[in-house]
Each structure stands twice: as C-alpha cells, then as structure tokens.
Length: 221
Image 1: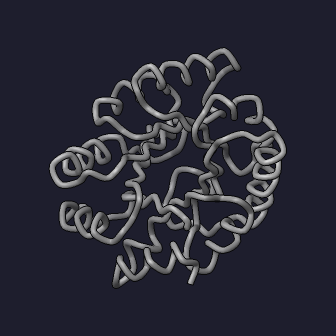
Image 2: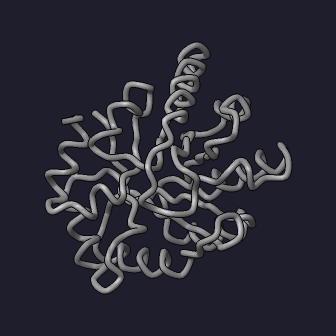
C-alpha cells in the first residue's frame, strides 16, 4: 500500500493545531515539512515550519519527513534536527560537488536520522545513482520546487520509472518518494512508475474529508 507523507505547507495559518490534529487522525504515515529559504527557491517558509513543528511536538507522534529546499544545507540540518525527524532530504542541486553530498549524508546519519536526496524535474535521474546505496530515500520532484498547488509534470513520471528500473536491477534498498501535484487523478501514474511514498498536500487539506481522501489515495480509488 502506498504511504502518504502529508505536506502541511497549505494548512490554514489561523487554526494550524486543529488541522494538524485532523491530518494525524486521517491515517497519513508522515508529516512532510517543506522548508524553503527564499534563496534556493523563491518562498521562505522557515519560521512557519518551525512554528508548526513546535505544535506537532505537543500533539503528534507521527514521523517527520523534512524536505530542505535551501542553499545552506548544513545550517538548516542544525535548525531542524532538534525536532528529531525520521528523515531529512536535501537537494542534489544545492551541493557544489560530490564531496559535499557525501559529507552531508554522513552528517545526517551521525545525527541518528535517515537521509534523502531530492532532484528537480530538469535534473537527470542518473546523477543520483552513485548515492543510492548510501541513502534511504530518493525524492523525485514532480513539479518545480518552491510552491504548492502546481500540476504534476508528466515527464517526471518517466524519471520515476527509470529510477525504479535501476534500483531493481542493482538490488538497492531505497524508497522512491514523489512530490508535487499528487492527487486522486495522478497517484496511479506515480505508483505504477515505482514510487512507494507520495507527498500530498493540497489534495488532502483542501478536501472536505481528510480521512476519506487519504483512504482513496492509499488504495488508488
């Protein structure tokens, strides 16, 4: 069954605790924390995400799936590792070279956290192959990072399929996470391509019944 990482980017800022509680009760598997710095992407959500995480600390026991869309990755690891996340994902495009990527992988692991690497829609999936045996999650952006509510870019589904083929051929244990434009109309495409975790935000938080929407996403109804 597909696992659902619920993005909290689009929740109502006036009543976050109520919505966060309802999301947890809906049957999601993770809270997806979209951290943006206003540099790597145009929006800055850092303070908002810290505020929401402080709320989650008091009401939730679900694993935290932190997605760093930032330029200074290590600085942001230090900001968010204090919330004891299950997984921290950073962008390959934000790293200057292979040594930095390897250093960040080690740094996150040394903080008792799982590691993910994400790539943008225009980055070739082959650029991440060398790191797959070292990480836990490969996050394929199915929209351009930085803003919620965008439609899924169809070409990115082919990248998921290409990644899945490589992982199976080389017998690598790593999750494939798809992020962006995931809803009841697109989830079958990314699942059939090989994703086993999807990030869903707008499709859940804008729905009338979170639990019913999550159930349908998980069962591809």
